[in-house]
Amino acid sequence: QVQLVESGGGLVQPGGSLRLSCVASGEIFRIIAMGWYRQDPGKERELVATINAGGGINYGDSVKGRFTISKTLAERTVNLQMNSLEPEDTAVYYCNMRAYESMLKWDDYWGQGTQVIVSS
Image 1 (tube, rainbow, N blue to C red):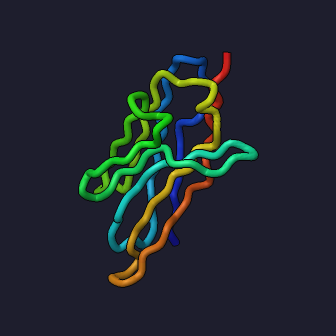
Image 2 (cartoon, one colour):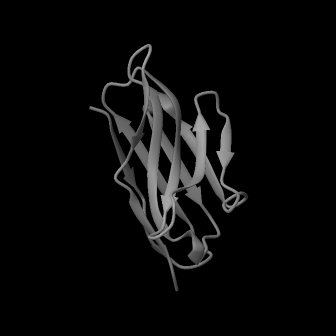
């Protein structure tokens, strides 16, 4: 069974930094991409950043220039360095992995989420 475990959330003041990490475990044939999404109560889940196996990166517009995603797919790990945090960044952050579980079948997997609160 595939599991994603996130860490690194918490409370930070505006302008501060946090680093999120996510480690995947279980039967994975090949990882296509890993990334982060976030969701605030009453809002839709939105893209934060993704990185694919080839190193291609995609950022949500609201985090460009402030957040940096990195990966070590051999270690099934994706990290998110968040700088210049703003109160609007407050949300539950979810790790996502798109991976083949066999040669023909791929699926999206999600972590349980980690809370980030930006407040003075």
